[in-house]
Length: 390
Length: 90
Image (cartoon, rainbow over all chains, first blue to last red; front, side, top):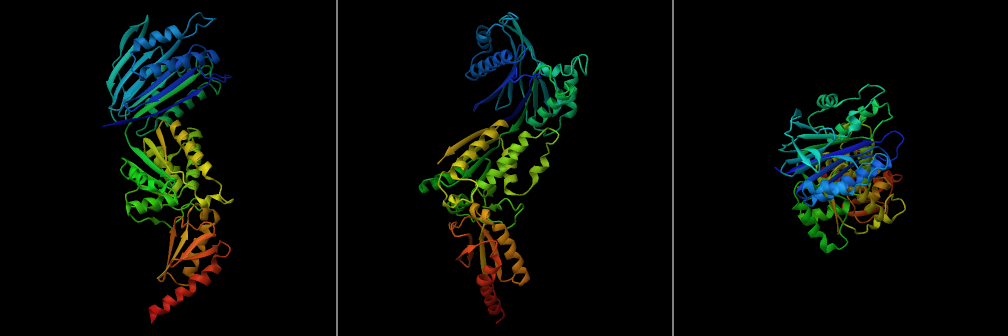
């Protein structure tokens, strides 16, 4: 099976600091997914520079095929030496997952990563390797569908130290907290927020160290293709519709005129529903062979609002039920957020004369912005998004 | 059968298609015309600049708004529907 790696991370900054000393870097390629969590020495600007350099160097070198020994050598000779402490230092965890499910990890001085197989805490085989005079844990194993990996910085381990808890939260307690709270199908984002929420509470909203949680879950790969807007050149209609029809996975059409084009090219009838599930959002329609047909700009705008409010809400307020409404915008948000693992937008840039009236809240320029915003927002949730213009 | 299509595309939606559909649905019920009038929604009809686009038996009706929806119904839809009804009975 080909896997998609659903990934999410979030950080809490050291109290009073504007910059975070932890840095997470994700790289997605056609062959693998790579994540690097680096924790720079200290906090603030200095730590931020150390961790940014470390994570960026690792991510860039590893994704172009470099060996771990070369990477460590490069980091050791690149990092600036701290004037106070006389050493250059940043811990890191590297997690590389192939689309076949093969996992390769390298851990250096970060809390050990936690692996859940079938939502049950499982051991991973680690061997100690000395590279450049430093001891690292390297492990390789095969992960399966729905397996989850969680990695965090030492700020999480020290949560509450000296205030609520004498010794901090401690590694074993964190692992059992995750084990107690993990649920089947829980998304990495929800788990990350939950864990970090607990950390923030233990620190009494004043984190004494940068704390970062990063989690991953393996899912079967399921792409979605979204056609939005008619192509500028009408000769391209057929090509774009064929691209949509021959795509794998979920097929979505957004836009009144666009759905008429799809209906005409495929010869399948377009039926517009007369039922408004929400008077503010135009009704949806159906075309045989297409999973979702909606109106264009207004639905997309509303969908963006929904996705934004989902990304911004707190872990406690996070409820998936709000994605169960039947209006076009919510259904689109559900497809994009939950059902698919990567999104491909086919964007037509033809001008709709109807949108040139002052009553319209969005013009064509805004519509293209809307799609860019939507793409950026989806990328934040860890999905691979591509946009193609016609 | 009288077929009435109301546009629910972006532009017409902004102008109030929802209200027009609601008004038409009510008037069809009040006048007991469910058997002779089919109300349908449609995406953009390409007539965005002339108010909420409405088609009655493939004839476009211009300048429909939620304010005059009932008037439009009595002027353009009811006569056709009644003719249809009489035809059925005869």
